[in-house]
Image 1: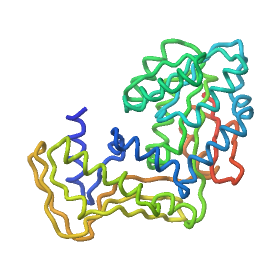
Image 2: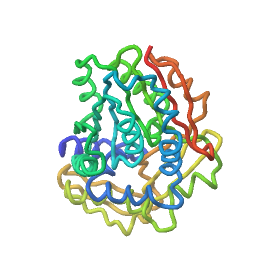
Image 3: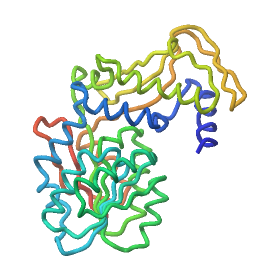
Length: 315
């Protein structure tokens, strides 16, 4: 893990412009900060998808086209704290559906907290946590031959560019069988005054979350980033529906990273690109799945039409 982290940090900081992978936001501190972000008044994404899982649970279950007596595997990619999924698990349990829940996450900490929580609130639900890379875990689950419903929520697909998103969905299809379902939660394109505050809250929690990545490099790779000389800066282009996050050097400076054995120079105002958050509409979703083995079945939106859960079927 640490070797991969080192390699990817080195590659990113040697890029022009500099980049760092957003997946490294998530350690114990990052996980806790992201839970705070999800509860912020400006961060509409979690509330919007929670609205669907809370108030349109039956629509979701109907879209899966499953019978209570037919066993299936419910697999969640990037389970986090399971806030939304618990609503679905509760409804499936109440209706006596036969299933196992497989949350997959890169964070062992998030998985152990989730398992502990679910054993208390939903003791009847069978939870089989899986730590690691999505595709490695999916490849191992493929052998079971059981019907599968994959959950990929929170507009996590939007952290990839369109080409990578299409490849990702194609790779999911390669690990599934005809008739299996993918629930893809996506943020819909909307105005700047709604989107931008979600990535730049008044309390500065999102800034802390982004800058924690530099803290990780300091702690785990022997870096000497001075966090007071970097700031978080988001951008959003309403026309193409893409939000971007940057860490910006506020002064001319040089940073040394011991584990890499290299120094990196920053100009004042120089940006490190950390994340994209793509927003979608129906045409973009159709475009992304065009070269995959999925077809679009159902679209379920929250009450404000900010967010959509698309149900795709592997054909």
